[in-house]
Image (cartoon, rainbow, N blue to C red; front, side, top):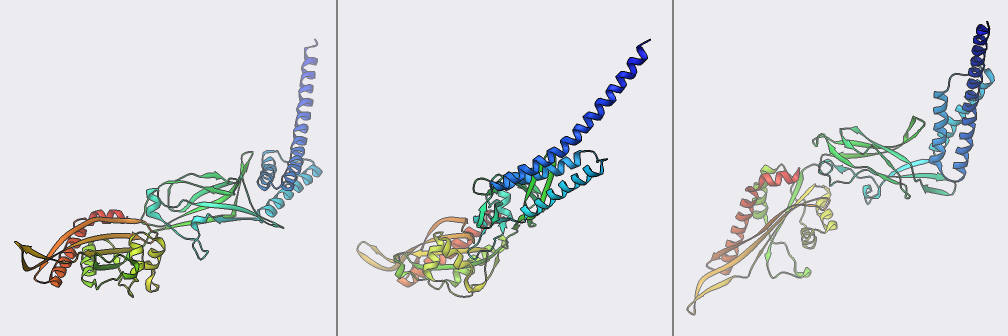
Length: 381
């Protein structure tokens, strides 16, 4: 007899509980939003802008999660809170700037391009950014900022997200790229996530371009006595024949050889041959036309020796020449360093012996390059 009454009572109780629980949930959404606003302001006051942005994105996430308001006043208040969060996000983000890492900046202050072939080999410079925020008193680095890295042009395997360190620096690692015959562009961007909602800031980004390097090269060569050691005595003898020999041998390597617009200072030549970066840069830009590679060849020859047999001198002279060949990229990396070749020349006079040694040395260099064309091509890729 009392069973129907009990059922009605239970239904009424469940309805009352659900209404109150829903009301509390609504109230919790509004309270949570207001708490997040206060938390974001506290974070800003203590110079933690990323934390502030996370709280503000949390407000947007709460708005997406919660059901629509049925009460007009609550709806107006909620819209006001969301609008305030949006405005604050815009205000804070406008103070950010993203710079490329120091290794990406050239001497003139502009950003350099990377080499896609180096990137594919894992030896190129990786994308590195520094995040800054502008305060009234100046700029400051921003720590703990999540930076998203992605390919805009091209495809590859990349570490997608990295947080800035105490210096405001974040970097990524490119493990592989799909192809090396086309340039790629990698973009770093500030991305904030909270409660499952992600907000990207496309205006806070930095692009990194990796290009296919032009294979232009210039040949510089020297033929000199071996006893020419001091910087003050360095000279570059006429080496047109040596340059021609090297040029013929390099035809199959894919290098586009450009003529030297002017002679190279001997001190710069020998410094570049030894790997001095400043000298390499000067040689690569000689005459105002830049090249990607330097082909440097040096032949040293010993003073001729006259043949003496049983105390009798003969009109036979010999001279030993040694060759050195290097192909150096404009960034200073030595891509080819051929082993030293030692070869003798002989003639009826001292001059003839030297010329014979030089002729044989030029042939030796040309033959050595020709027999290693595939190796050189591979090194240039």
